[in-house]
Structures are given as structure tokens and as C-alpha cells.
Image 1 (cartoon, one colour):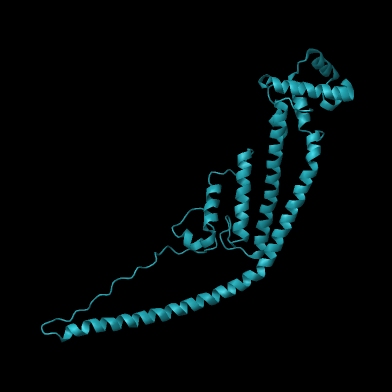
Image 2 (tube, helix red, strand yellow):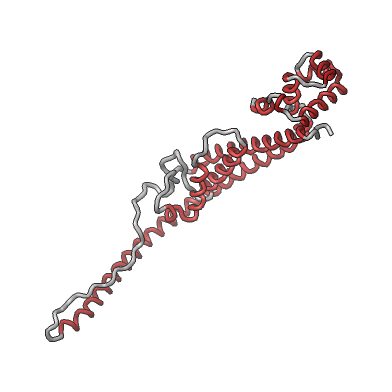
Amino acid sequence: MEDDFLMLEDPREQSTGEKLSLMVLLERIVREQGQMGAAELLGVNYKTVAAALETRHLSRRMTHALELLLLSEENPIFQKYQDRFAVIDERLDGLENIAKELVAGVEGLRTSLDTHRAAQERLNRSLERRIGGSLRVEAESREARETKPASRGKGVTPMAIEAPARPTRPTFPRRDYDEIVTVEPSPDDSYVYGKAWPMVREWRMLRGNHPVRGDTLSWMERQERLLMVELALLNDHGLTLPPDAQPIDDHWRRHVTGWRLRDLRVVRRRILRRKLLRWVRRLATFGAWWG
């Protein structure tokens, strides 16, 4: 239905080159299949075909029939590129299998990383307690040394000398889960997401003002990039995307990854088909169809 809508234009708005291209196409069909065969192929009455050849004028019905033939399966261009579509499907299937293997291989690595992360956090907390205690003892000792000479002087009142305040890292409101990619930005995004922060920022930009559905080529290309970024966030960085409000496990991650891979296949095929249709229209416009 999308193809029919693209080509069903008012014949009065067609250029001379388009009309000439359609007339050349009609003459070629009649030359190869005769008027009756051409009428059957186009789905019109043979009298309509005869009138078009005699008057050299294409009616609205005849124009639409010829335009639809350009986009039909019987169009030699589509037959020529049918093998290429098959190759693209095979490559996408191969990418999907590779993604599944990567997710399966990451499971064991993620488990060991979680164990290592927990041990590292315990070690960090222990080091913080030791360093904090050492700094506290050193500060008390330094304060005692600085106030002792003043207490020995005549007529000098002992005074405690305050140590200069040390710069501290800015604090932010605590998050429930650092693995969740939020739609709204937060001041601590660069700290929380780390290496994934540039992709999170791009994901928010692509997602903003992007309709759920669209038919234009620009929408399809933006949807393709959005899906690629989401797959990278899910698999390369182990993050969780909305609408999930809690970190997902590996089983659910395989599901959401598979959904996005299928959507990516569909949108890439739509992009290729739309560009091919534009090329066909350009050939028809300049009268280059059928040589």
C-alpha cells in the first residue's frame, strides 16, 4: 500500500519527461505482448490501451497502472536486485547470530566481574577507613605541635590553629540503580555512566522528538541509528533501558536485544527499498527507463 500511495499522483502534475517515459514503457509492453496482453498485465480494458496509443495521451487510470507496474514484482529492476536483498538478509541473520554468541560469552565474564567488583568495593572501604584514621591522627598531632609553643610564651593565650579545609568531591542525590539509563539528565551522569556517557547523551538526543512510527527516509535513518546505540548500551556497557525500571538479567537482556535486532533488520530493508524507489523515479523522470 505504501508503494501505491507513493506513485498515485495527479497526471496533470507530471513533467513531460515522466509522461514520455510511461508512453515508452506502454509501447514496449504492447510490442512484446500485444494490446490484449498489455491490457491484462496493466489491469485495464484493451480499448484504453488502444486509445492511449492512438492519441498519445495517458489517462489517469492508465498513468496509475503504468506507475504501479514500475514498482511491481515483475519490474526487471526488482528482479535484478532480488539476489542482493537475499544477501542482505543472510548478513543480518549472521549479525544476529554473532550478537547471540557475544551475549552468551559475556555471561561468564559478567559473573566474574561482579565478584571482582564486590571484592574491590570491600577493599576500597577498608582503605578509606585506614586512610581516614591516619589523617585524623596526623591532624591531631599537627594541631598539638602548633599550639604547644604558644602555651609556653609569657602572656600568650593558647589558641588552636584551624587546619585549611580540603576540597571535596561534589555530592549528588543517591540513585536507586546506576545501571538504569534515565530519560531526564542528572548532574552526575558523567560519573555514573563513565565510558558509556557519550552514548547515553546521543541516545537522549536521538530519542527526543522522535515519533514511535514514521514513513519518511529521515525517520528511518534516525531509527536505525537509535537502535544501533541501544544495542551498544545493552551489550557493550551492560546498561538497562526504559521502560525497565530495575536492572535486567542476562535472560531478559537476550530478549530485548533480539527484539531490537529484528527491528534493525526491518528498518534497514525499508531504507534500501525507499532509496531504490527514488532511483526508479529518477530514471522515469529523465526518460531513461527501458534504455
